[in-house]
Image (tube, rainbow, N blue to C red; front, side, top):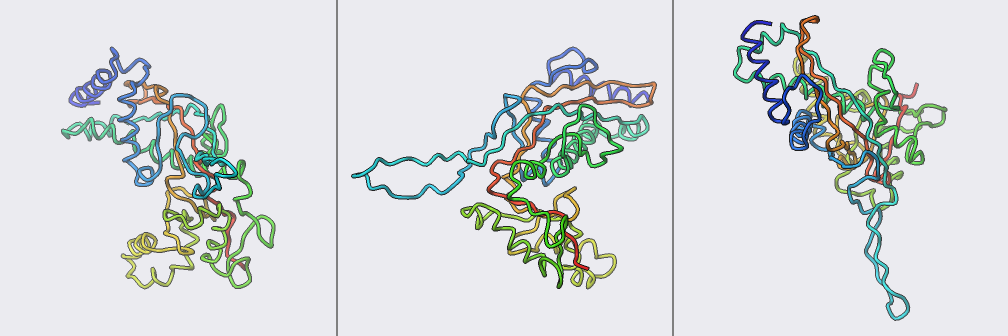
Length: 334
């Protein structure tokens, strides 16, 4: 790296060390809780989707979900001349449990890119942003695609980070299978079309809402997370009506304002192919263990790069299984 880049990078590592009260950022250290929270906030703000769900710090590495959700109705009346009033437990009977798994978020930045950034006054902010943005995207990818937590992950075999942690959808498959619809008349798929299991995607969503607990089916914050490809037939005519150079904007606008089965559509990054999920965004959580983030930032001249090694103990949590449903293996009828 160039001399001016070296000065800028040294200033970055010195700032990291100072904020965490350690002598050097090039030796592995525990990120202080206050700095950890700032990092978590930056990661959350790097993604519009993460900003809408819960990202919470927990003290224990394992436990039960911590957001207080009302798992059923509480209104009623008791004839106290015959029996005492019995308050309704507001904790959900559908609560998830969590186990924070160590997750490595290691980032390498080549000298060439650092040299390009060094001339800007916001060098430290640019470098920090590059590090947190990828962490944000990877967390979303794990949430929708994670099925296991392997001791050693295999990126080639699991390009969607399926083996990094157990995500929200897998939680439904294993802990609430009655709320998962994955087969229709033909085993292993649900078909949409004139000869399919459902004539329209809207009809499928209307039916899938019945998988939720009765008191949640008309929840004002319900949304549909959906694979964009499934919207092709529903919105194709409107999108094709726009000029070629406006197609992508038209698609984004239609999805942002559209509904399925009467519910707002959320075009979530990295959502599974051929799937939809009905829930509220606040029903999905990522827990990180407080004082569980480790970091080391150093120069690696043998690779012409700098490296930022970070790890965080993370868990993906469904706050109330009764407030959601998953439909997968959706295809167009032949």
